[in-house]
Image (cartoon, rainbow, N blue to C red):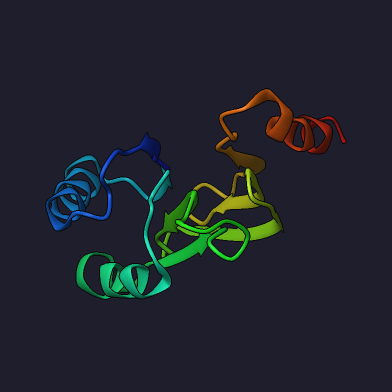
Length: 126
């Protein structure tokens, strides 16, 4: 299983969508976390229909306006269960259907100021 993480600037632009799709296909990536997406729910739906048909996604868009964390995965190869979805982190259980390996994985995108990150650190400690 190949996983990738990308903090992408300007992800709402269609050209970035095309580049991301090409990268995923070229590298045979099965799990991709996109950070700082700034997508709306409508934008996300259109993106999934056009670029990642048949893939599943988990996001934290309801917890923070503008979309901070988006996780894309191929359900033919990966089972992903979101355990906790917060504004700065998504905790998941991931299972590779090819190798039968399972593990816990947290996708983090911390807020800019120290004060607003305190909740993130408390959550990670727990």
